[in-house]
Length: 148
Image 1 (tube, rainbow, N blue to C red):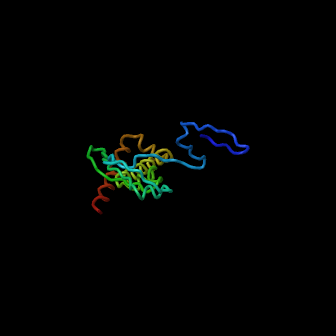
Image 2: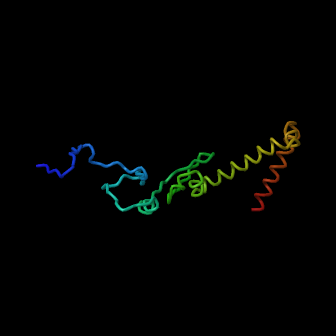
């Protein structure tokens, strides 16, 4: 039996509103944070910040990189915050990716030199002088390897 107060209006309940909308100033994150599915799914309550979620679940992934020679190298990447999912965050955790980044930077420097250094470009156009430059580079490379 329904009761009404003075000046009240009847508002019929709608069954589809069993779950309330998330307020506009809130964000709900739902994501798989572990590599293996849980044996028994659980609801974790009380986590109010993203840092608390990362501290609770400690997401990480084992990944295998392959170098230019086809050799595999396994590394584990751990994520302690959203910034760890970006390029810098992933590269900072991986020695393999750091090496590739350094190699890329060296190649970019060489390209810049080739574009801006007219004498070097001219030397590389002539097959004889190109071979002389390569021989000098090989000799310097051997010296560096012997020094280490």
